Length: 111
Ligand code: HEC
Image (cartoon, rainbow, N blue to C red; front, side, top):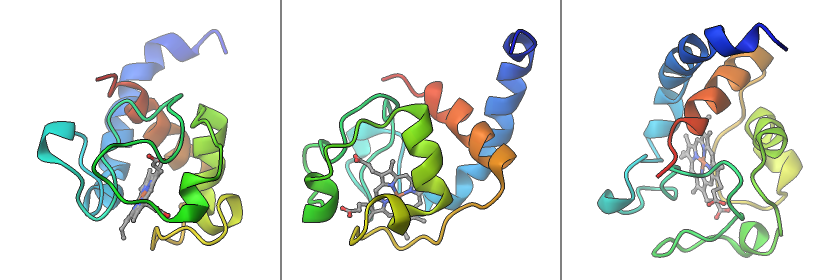
């Protein structure tokens, strides 16, 4: 995807809007502590279940997942399909473009 670079900022901007659906439960600022779910700053390539101060389901804590872009894409599409028994009460985002934009946004949250 050589054309991806110029579009990236725009994808992330769209993704920030998609993230509003997540922001009910997830902050992007670890200093504010977890909401209903763990903070999602720097989640890309992080090991699942490792935000200190958040109590995960054992399903997620023991999943062994590394949140690569591909894994995040699959999880956001259908959380219960990727981690059966997890406690995230969210049905998923069926639209692949919305998920791609969302992940572009998550990649901007490095720290
Ligand atoms: C209704 C609240 C809620 C919504 C909405 C929600 N989540 Fe979650 N999320 C959670 C909870 C609770 C967990 C922890 C689940 C567990 O421990 O099983 C979680 C866990 C996660 C994890 C795993 C984090 C880690 O540290 O391993 C990711 C990634 C994630 N959510 C992404 C998203 C994204 C992206 C969205 C929006 C598309 C979203 N969530 C929407 C509540 C929510």
